[in-house]
Image 1 (tube, rainbow, N blue to C red):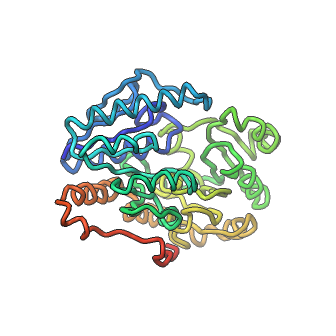
Image 2 (cartoon, rainbow, N blue to C red; image 1 turned 120 degrees about the vertical axis):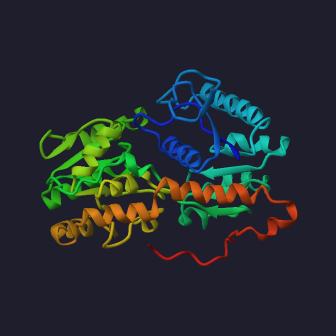
Length: 360
């Protein structure tokens, strides 16, 4: 098959630092290529992924400021990409809402991976495109949606790019946007209550500069609480791989949380607060613990030596979150939607009334 993967035009693929959707697309493109499929990625001209890349805008643009001109740029890029892909691709796989209206003007089947938390206005909009095949990235996310042709495919990553580190150093890590919904202020609280130093990495976006100045910066002393800036892949391997645990004190319904599986790929367990997909990603006692409070996170850290098993954490990531497993799941979907319409009813789908899944 020839598969079009359409990304927003703002961040290069793979991302040099921040970019969850872009990391997903880089892993998916390489996984599909490894399985023998022809892939074309529509991104920007700075993308450097070993598949065909087409672009309308030569340069990446991040961070964006939320201006109308940027919305117009994304609309323009997406419309051009869909039109171009319609001439030569067997499947068009979009990753933003702007691609949906164009599904009405081509006979090429559409897949749309939904990367955001539930939004009633968007869900109502999606209902007008029942022929699109929607993919949620967690069951938590799926059970809050009502579109037809809806299924979950968990993310996976290229595990060969992450190094298992069996010997840990005495510090905790936090990696993510420095924003209140990500909870770095709670990670600081965990570090102080447990007495274990914390290294914080992530982007400080302009919109959250005040939060950083008030809730995070006053605690940074360069010794016990460190801010190490944004992290590229090499820095992630060092930061995550050497830490005792990744703290994931999420304060919103995160649809997935790629940093959790990046940590596990390095053999580092995750201590996460309940929210969004955390119960699906973290297996209690195997790859970390799902906690209900800061104090519960601190409690697990008191006896971490008794349950810290880096090799088992890495094995769990290999079994559940490889790019090969993810790509294989998407290929199964792509092939299924190539079937004649009479066979479409045989495709597995899920209804809103299904029983909600149990924790991992």
